[in-house]
Length: 534
Ligand code: TNX
Image 1 (cartoon, rainbow, N blue to C red):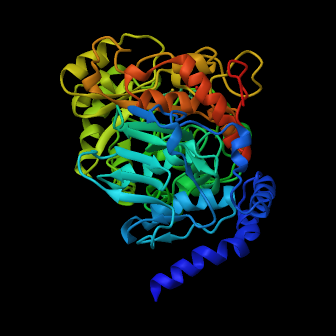
Image 2: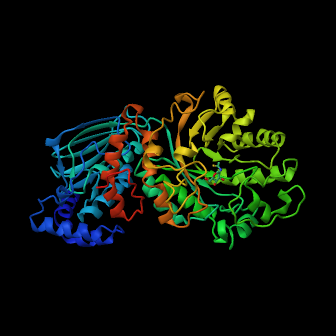
Image 3: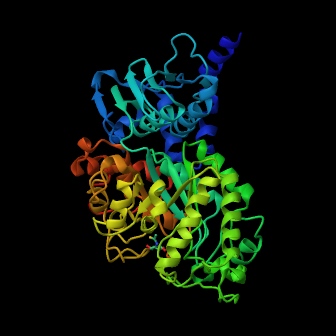
């Protein structure tokens, strides 16, 4: 009975549901997809509209997979009868695949636990040996199968299928894939300009397509405080209010409820949220709200400019540590991920001695709340950083403090500002962004090796890479997308793909072929002249 119902659904509903399904998607390619669908159906559902658009080969994947064996004779055609097969516990991942394919085809693409009879299918299956995020993809004329040991691997495989398909065909052959580094991150700065939960979700959607698995949120800075802390409510009442942020264009902050919702949303795309509260510098907004966080007890004026390095918590005051502990405790309670980022950068208004005093107390506090301490690489000045993770944001390839701490066990996430900072202009004509670390065209973002970049930091000490995007000059999602894409794809490849696959000519070609996917989703990417866009 159930089987019959599924077959009936697969056979009949696609034809009825097609136009609606296509129209429902937010994609700006919806109308075109609908026209293709109608044409294909008029031709008996056999014509593959995508063939005309020079559909991808199985090797057209960003980040490049570990091993690809294309087989031109084994192409799988997606038809109105195709189903997605996923066990109930993997249903949500199956839906991620089906949702995009429905948008492209207008077909129903039901997600079913067992595909009936010989219906063509894209199947998700479990198989040991693929590690935390690895997967194997096989495609032949009867279907495609993604096998993984863990759900994150199935999700990664789904992203690969979505890249190689034009909605009508999945190119034949097989892929075996797994990440080079466990940490592949992106960062948004909500302090300089607030970005709404919806904007953050759209960014999560886009970064997870490139197998980015961490999103670092910079939640406080001199200009604004963007996360509700129940024990210190004025932080957001005052410094998340109107007039906060660069140029005073606030307001905005995340309630704890909104933050938890973001964490949940990200988890559904296998992205871990990493919250950052920057200290002991970059704290002017906190001090505006609570003058007792200064040494003289006088509230500083709110700041809407982009200067850095002028504010410091009062290191000799116990109020400071009560504040820090309250914040870390509340953040830890709403953050299931392993990391709390405590900033630590550009503390130019804190003396060296005070900086060390502060870190000796605060780095261990993170562990007290069950989390791993993570900070900008300035924390390597402190001996207490040996158990932490440091995010390297320098523009040099040597840092004695980082090398010394790494020898003691510290791990490093690589974000060299002159390679991985997505807020740097592409060239002198880029209307948005800054240029203090130089101009970063796509090739510059791509051509470096995180595993051998820093003297004294062997690959074994590198947890991964992250591409920060600071928001001094950015307002809305279009601005974010224009700076992030296509460079984020380059950083994602450095984080995921084996060093042996690193090849600018190949990346450049695959990136050019990806352009229409961004266009069809309305992603406002920068059409770099270095790339031949399809
Ligand atoms: C440096 S990078 C900063 C930020 C700025 C950024 C702008 C780092 C750890 N600190 O405060 O927003 O440059 O590119």
